[in-house]
Amino acid sequence: MKILLLSRQPGAMAPFLAESTDAAGRRLRLGYVDDAQVAFAEAPFVRAERESVEALGHEVVRVTVRETAPADLDRTLADLDAVYVASGSTFALLEALRGSGNDTVITRHVRAGLPYIGSSAGSIIAGPDATPASLLDDPADGPTLTGFAGLALVDRTVIPHADGQLPPYPPELISRTLEQYADDYPLVPLHDDQALLIDGATATVIPSSP
Picture 1 (cartoon, rainbow, N blue to C red):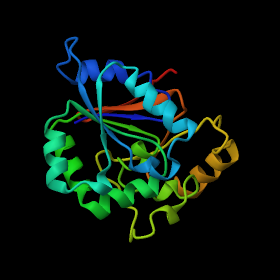
Picture 2 (picture 1 turned 90 degrees about the horizontal axis):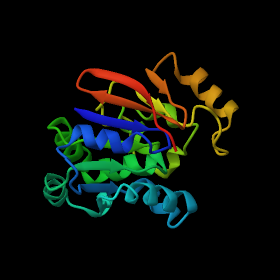
Picture 3 (picture 1 turned 30 degrees about the vertical axis):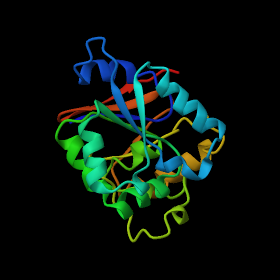
Picture 4 (picture 1 turned 45 degrees about the horizontal axis):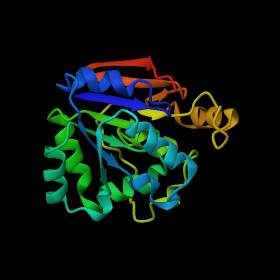
């Protein structure tokens, strides 16, 4: 599998796409899964994130999984070069994936080789369990969830914004998250200028600049 899990900054995306696809200078088709952002509409961080993806110069295909039947998502993913799962509410995103049945569709395509890029919430849900995000995001955003199991594309849960520089996630909140969950869950804290790169069985924390 080819997976890139961002905390916030997008610097690692362009080289990841160049190395994990047969890009060779051509314009790619990137699926942009926006379910974590539905409640935030046109918030500045949503616009900034979308623009950072569009700035790569590829075609960006909006995907809202809660509104998409699994068979339709299957056809959409089959026609993409990579899928990007955006930041926002971890538990709203997880509910959208589980409730629609599209969690299994995305997992199947990624395991078959479709490159996966996650950012913040999109990185968290790629792990085995989103429970460690319960202090960072509100589990009530996913009211129909009966558990917080993630997609298990990777064997650890990303804790984004771990440098405590983003105002909603101050250092004391990051420290409390790590203290509360590190003994029971395999965690990878990522600063906002870092990413977790997974290539096959190898996982490496790499720089991801603004």
